[in-house]
Length: 330
Length: 200
Image (cartoon, helix red, strand yellow):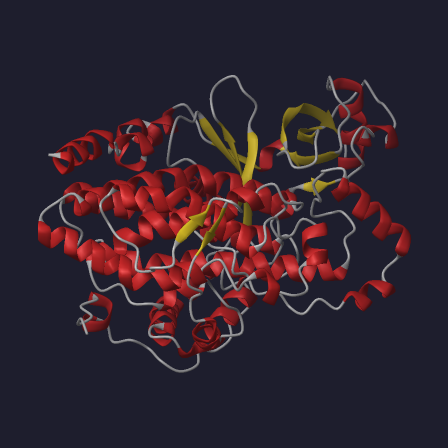
C-alpha cells in the first residue's frame, strides 16, 4: 500500500544540460510513445535518482505499513479475521521485497536502502506514523488506506519504468483482496452492535485527517513535478488521486451509516470535484520530519528486528554459495 | 486519550539509537525466479530473490511468487549465471547482430526472450553450444521466433534449479486457502440487511 504523497528531490532541470542530448531525445520519445524503459536502457541520471527515491519510499512504506496491522493479528476478533489479516500482512511484506528488487535494478543495493530507512534519511508513507488504538483502526487501514494506495498504484502501474510497473501489477492484484477483506471487516463493525458502530466511527474520526494527507500536499504547493509527469514517473497529481479516492469511497462510507467528520465535505456538482476542509499541512510536514506520534516507535520496532536478526544473517551468509553482489535483472 | 496496548510496546524490549551500517551482502546474494503458471505454458520470469543458496531461493520464491492460484513449477537461477544481451528498440530484432549457426554441439544452454518492453522474459528453447556467444548464434539458427526479440537472457541449463513432479505437493493446499482471496469476503447480504433495517 502507498499513497501519492511521494517526496521527490528538488528537480533541478539544469542537470539535464550535461546529458547526451541525442540519447535524451531517444529516451523521451520512447516514453512519449508509451513504451517502457528497461534496466539496461540509457536513462538520464535525474530519472534514475527520482525513481530510486520513489520506489524505495514505496518499499519502506510496505514494510513499515505492515507494523501497525501486524500488531493486531493476535488480537483480531476470531480465527477468520486472524487468518485474513495474517495473509494481508504477509502480502505487504512481500510487496516490500518486490519493490526493493525493482529499486535495486536501478543501482542502489538493498543494504543501502535499509540503512537509509533506519537512519531516517529515507521516508515512508506518513500515515503509518499514527497510532492504531483499536481493532477498528486496523480495519480502517485495511479498507480505506489500502483503497487510497490502490488508486495511486493502478495509475503508477502505467508508468514508464518496466520493473516498477511489473511489481505494481502484481501488487494491485493482491490489493484487491486487501480491499475486500477491509471492507468486510468495516461492514461488520459498522452494521454491528452500538458499541461496534461507535468504535468504527471513532476510528474513522481519528483517521480522516491523515487519510486526506496521505495523497500529499495540494497540487498548487507541489512544485517540480512537471518533468516527473512527462517522464511518467508520477502518473496522477496529488489532488487528482485524492479526488478519485473521495469519489469512490465517500459514498461507500456513508452507505454504512458512518459520518465523516468534516461539515464542509460535499461534491460540487458544477465542477464535479469534492470540497473539503484542508487537513493541517504544517502537521504533515512536522510528522514527515520525524515528529509524529509513532515515528520513533515504528523505526524502533524495525531496528529491534535488525539488531536481533543480525547474528542469523551473519551465520547464514557464512554458508552462501557465492559472495558477490549482483543486482537483480528486472 | 485511549491507552496503546500494542504487544510490541508492552512486551518487546525495543531498541533505540543508531544501528550500524549494514555490511556487504547482509541481505544475501541474488537469484532470479521463473514460474510456470500451467503446463505447457512457458516459464516466465517473475522477479528477484535474495537467499544463501539455490534451494533456499526456491523456498522463498514459492512464498513470494506462488502464494495464490495455480502454478506447475518454479525454476531458480543465480543472477550471476545469467548472461544478458543489449536491448533493442521495439521491432528491431537483437538476433540481427549475431551470425546464424545451425549445426551446434556442446553444453546445453537455456534461452529466454523478451519480445516487448514491459513484458517479462519467457522461456524460448534450449540449444547446445560451445560458448555463450556460440549459443546466441545457435539460438538464431534453431529457435523459432514469431516476433522480433528485443533482449535475450541465456544460462547453462545445468545451472537451473528446477522443481520436479514430486515437488508439486508444495502447491496442493494453495487452492484451499480461500482466506487469501477477495472472493471469500462478500458483504452484499450484510449491507442489504442493514439498509432494510434502517428503512424500518
